[in-house]
Length: 265
Image (tube, rainbow, N blue to C red):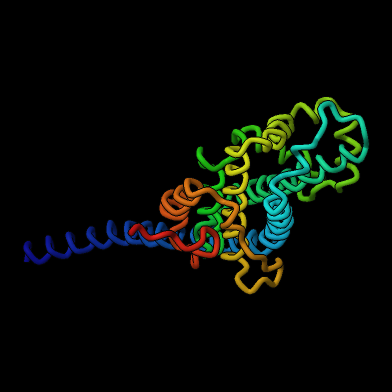
């Protein structure tokens, strides 16, 4: 009889202790699942609202870079310093603005995704890979801090980009704005040098691949041919070995961007 009573007491105590523990454990699992679900929903919402304007900004930039590639950056070789005519100012700002607009869209995306995990969304995961590539040391055109500042300089009302006309007017009137965008302006002026041109063209290739990968049917963007004939063999090796090989291994049809590699005989 004492053994039976002791067994009953132990069983009772076990139940008293186990039920709260099980409830806490189950509650933790439910909370974690809920957190992941909410993060996934937030990521999808951000991609739904931010991917389209980002792709359009990338498309405009890539179109300009392709035009510069075809002309071997002639407009920057003939650009006077200092600029004294409105036409030269507009020509310079037209390229600076497209970079700033693209970088501004990246900053808006960062702000919107501060509390979301974009990697939980398929398109978000791909986009993050491209952003890491574009901002890597050997690919980025200016330091990341300067890129962020240039992008922020064209953001209006937190979620929009200022119009081109306003940007030109501010460029002409604001020494402070010109100071922020000076690293990019100097880079573009240095496109008279072949090495700088190749660097900018490599950046454009990755932007092009981003567009083709995230908008394969080109519902938002234009489908454009690449410019592998404008790339040096070294630039092609860097793209194949590092950009596509390390950061972007899932990019399809890499030959479109770098051409068919020559076989050694």
